[in-house]
Length: 375
Image (cartoon, rainbow, N blue to C red):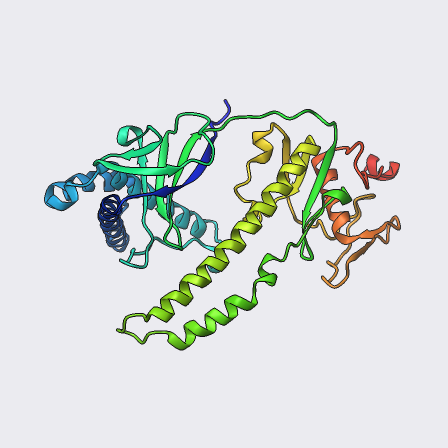
């Protein structure tokens, strides 16, 4: 049975002063619940006991009865933040079990401090509804949504959150809608590189590094120097100049992130429009980690293991004993004499391992010698 898929649609929010105050009050309650979960989980860990989301749900009932101010808030976002805590803790324990290096682990959930943690509230079921173009939350909170496009279906949940610039957004979860594209009968291999973000078996579909951050690196450096000069001492409040420099820095990095996301989405859409089958190196780059283009347009996507792709020959399958240095950008096979750009060879290896035959694609998959096929 196929797993149900969902899609997210994010929209900017406009709100009144009363709605903003009510959201901050709800977040203060949810932040308190999160911190209690962290304290309870740490106490249970020291005692050698288990403390899962089910046990924390039962504790939430007691907390709401004990503290009147907590019970006055909506129960749904408080329950959902316990779910978020459970997922974060389970991921950390899984990283420890799988012996993931410390620098790559998610880390155990920590306390959320007031003023340093940005609000994020999740509403599900009957705790929200969209009526007359406005988002109405439980507790009488009404928010005006800046609709850039209509929702394709009724949302099942919504997350209201604040970004680093202080802007508020609503992220609706709706059932994913498929939009099949015409078949092309072609395949493509994708290798994530260093000099280019993506090298493919088609020269027309290579993704060079856009260098958005490099073009804007001068201004953030100036603002960071200003922040360093105005950095408050421990116990002192931040000056207006420090806060303004920090806000301007956040705006620049937000713009760079959006430019990178826009470039990646346009490239991914062009690839799935031109090819039916995609063999992609399975290293999950961050800027494409959440891309669902292939599933949305009913394309066949194969994630290929990245081991030995730089040492294996795409033509004869032979492997070199040592990986070539990064400075060596041309792959030479001592067995069959193949010579081609290193990343192009790796992209062809993706196709070979996925079992695709890219008819009509530039630098198509070469035929292997008969001796290698028999082996």
